[in-house]
Length: 341
Image 1 (cartoon, rainbow, N blue to C red):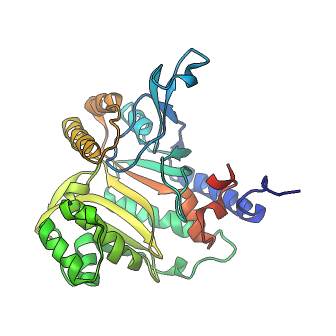
Image 2 (cartoon, rainbow, N blue to C red):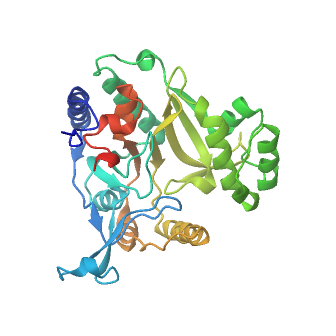
Image 3 (tube, one colour):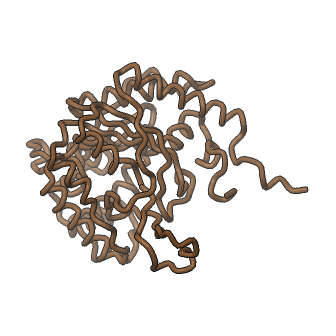
């Protein structure tokens, strides 16, 4: 008799994961946050140029599933951001959430189409405050696992994006053109896909980051990568950086052993700019053959009503568990990875 019903993670691992979830809730409650619960299925979502959500149709007709074009479009959320920012604008104060999120087409050692997201927003915090909160959380969780990683007692590095390229490729890149970045890729021995031949600056930056920078980040000690290009701000504020000679995003990502664990923003509270970025991202989606997505009108309305000064961080919790518990694949820390569903 086969054992296909068995979980992809061991029960010991799942118990360790449960203890980490308990510790997350304790961590945030001690700091005055409260836990919220927002919809996973909604008519709107925050649009990303490269993240593809699952979409379905809502209908009172029980047989609507047989007619994909019938009923209202409904989207499984790629993160709880849409709902949490509406709560912030309503006066919630600092909040956190542990919830399932969904991203279509993502599967691999560090990806699963359904995953657990830890997301929090801190009112009246700066991005520097959020770096400290994130580091404190990861350290605390690292102390809860049976064999804490070697880096759990070492300071986390803070490395600006431009300086990361200078360290590993010998030059700063934030003022380079697409042609100059293409030449750099050739000089450092990369073999880019043919589709990049017509790529823009961000396409080349993302390629070089993935190929030549990310594998080095977080080796020996966790690394916060800071000050991304302003063109990659997503929903973060931007500012001029004299050292880089360019505008940068008030955004960070945390890496451990070359694996990206979280994304943090000093949240943009300008609804007109949010709408402009939505149009820009929607155009990118169209140019890359991705389907259009509904505009987050309720989010824009909430921001216009008054989003407080806040910072936000989204952590792929399964991936964090994978790193802390030293598991080779993400399916090793979830009850049933996609292959077992």
